[in-house]
Length: 139
Image: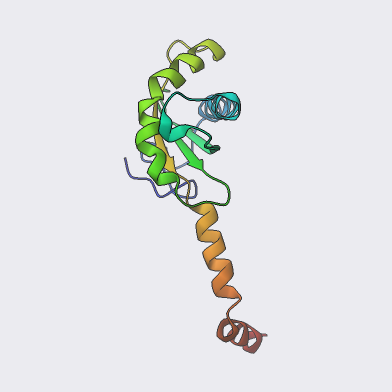
């Protein structure tokens, strides 16, 4: 699967986008994972005292795979946490199975959400004097 973050397209989605069921299940998975990350202290030392935000969840049409986009507010090192998140995936799936009313809990695949970093980079570029001058010339 190729993904470019929450703004990119996920392979497997139809041209019209995900179904209402996919959207509903993805949002429920996002909500439950966000609650788990907010109140759980993981035994994994790499996740101790780490605040993770679940920005988006995309789920495959068969509901068997979920891509979970994560970020750390004010920090850009979330990619370094992906191995630790993979290690705690069985624990997270168990917690999801108790919270969701689904036949099966989707496999979780974590991806860093770089959309905020990208937006901040664009904002910084737009504030540069030479870009401001060019934008004023356009008016």
